[in-house]
View 1 (cartoon, rainbow, N blue to C red):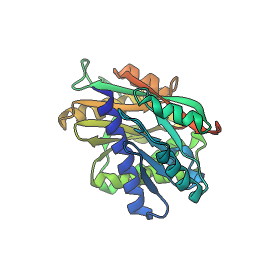
View 2: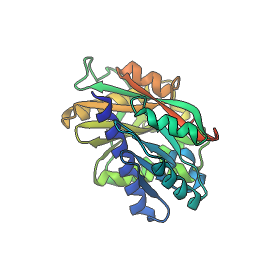
View 3: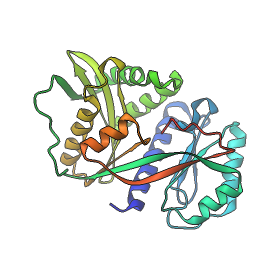
View 4: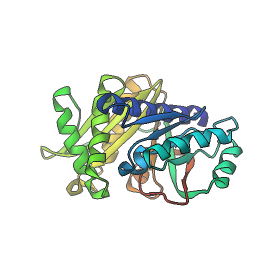
Length: 274
């Protein structure tokens, strides 16, 4: 699928995350700033780049210095910095403007896509691992499982709670949530947002004791199967190069659509977070 369509879908996904957090916690704590095109999410600096980054800027159109100046002004008001995740197909004026304003690359993010239905079967035979969709009554169970799966990343627990809480809140609109169980114990969790006819796979986590058993791949396959049933034409997922998530995505059949470069002002980035 065209990179413009994929980046637009992921930008919409970010916009909906901001809206969810604003609904839950107020517009004074979470702000979205349009970049025309693109969107920046701005929050407290304690949440790092995960809730302070921008997507989709300069896609297919030049950008003006005033756009970046307005973003800097909002960041100064919150005493935070926003990282810019730049698509390689963005207009060249974006990277030039970032460089001129003291930004430098801090890392990269693979954007994977797969056409639906996938060419290989999405089911795996004879596994003791059970994948189930999360019912409304199990939303708190999902939140706890998601936090427990991400604890080893050393991200702040309040951030992990916000991410899981937002995903749970979005089940009212565009998100489907999943739990993985092994021997009747919760082993992992994941989400899928539907943006038009694109399935966005996100918030995958596996508990430490259950890693290395193919659980994330099973969660991916379950979501792909449901995405087909929901009429999606393509699925997309983001992952840092060389991580378990990127390896699992490729094993399931995802291919790299493009690779974003993350830019931070003064090189003060946190490359480990997507």
